[in-house]
Image 1 (cartoon, rainbow, N blue to C red):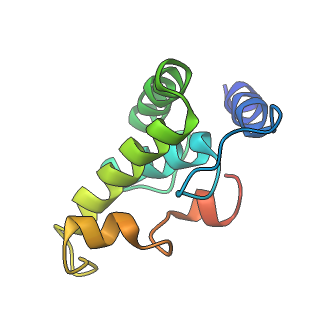
Image 2 (cartoon, rainbow, N blue to C red):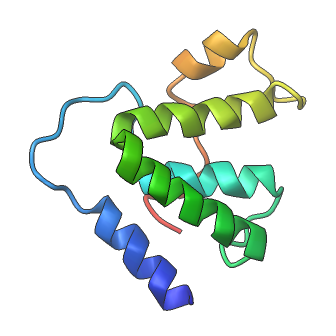
Image 3 (spheres, one colour):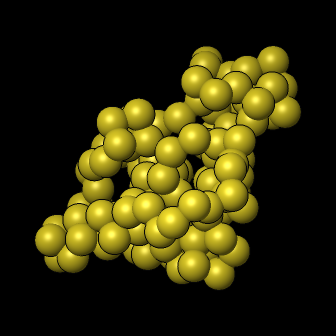
Length: 110
């Protein structure tokens, strides 16, 4: 299972040509994992809830495209942040803040 997840993340993280620029940096698959780990309040990518959530995230990337999916994932992270001490002045400010990202996006992988 761990190998499958790693291969999936690598496959989605590989550049597929010159894609349109997106205001949200990083790979969509990494955003999916960070969003899911935030939802389940864990850093365990093998957590059953995270794995199922990430599978749904990968399907979302395939159906919506990379940049729209990253907006959705970052939106989920911003919603979670607004409920913590790390909240931003507003949801909109959180979405505009390029420093808002999870460890998977920062580290460019799990």
